Image 1 (cartoon, rainbow, N blue to C red):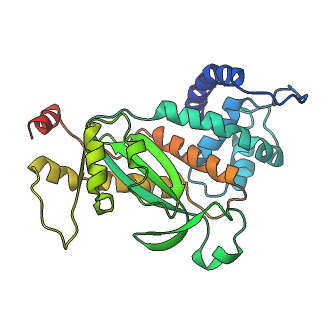
Image 2 (image 1 turned 45 degrees about the vertical axis):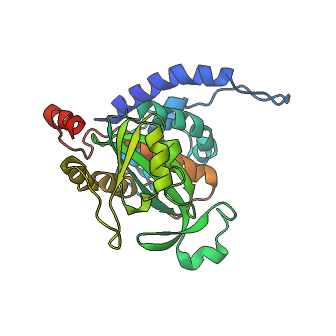
Image 3 (image 1 turned 90 degrees about the vertical axis):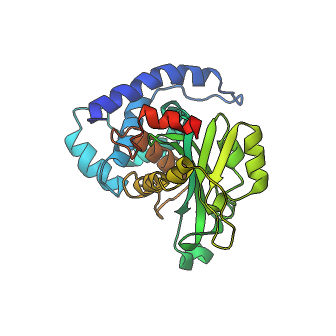
Length: 294
């Protein structure tokens, strides 16, 4: 997205289609509720939240009060107060998830899988952490022990997110792979964390070939030159994980509720999907066709 206006147009077009269909499927509990619409439209509120993750701000309060309220007051004439905006933010979770689903990339036959940690607090503060008590779990990643969740991603060679899933920190990387791989074709490349003969056989039955590196104490296995080359290109998904954390800002330790964590994560994923220049592999048609021969 080039600017905030273009972002709003895209989000508002989606909301005009999705919101009426979503409201038709909502169930009522029998109690009388106010039907008054919010001063700000759903598209405007989603634009503000997504814009935060596309900017270089690290504090939403300063972004809202010192940036949006000062420089975009004309674009949002019915801008809510900061406290009121925080109250209505949980209502954006479902539309944001649906919007992310509409932005996901399509399988290309060359996909990469990896997971990254989402820490919710420092290890020394785990005993007195209350926000995610009973929800977040301790886990171990490449950088040691942490407390929080894991984000599992599958991306194609164009740098587009094909599938995503969040689990607690104590879930092994191989657990959500079969669910994430639904609809994939041909080859899926992963690191040593996805070594599992049972998983490999299950995916093969579904038409997906899981290709991983081997540990140092394992025998080297026969592998085509193309697969070796693609395994060496796994930096693409590691770069995406890094951009999600450091640019889209999906990880921080200041969450006050699970709803805030969920919306922050989904808005960060949406902000990445809207990026024009994503990390990608410049594969030609000849190179992609050679994969079939290999």
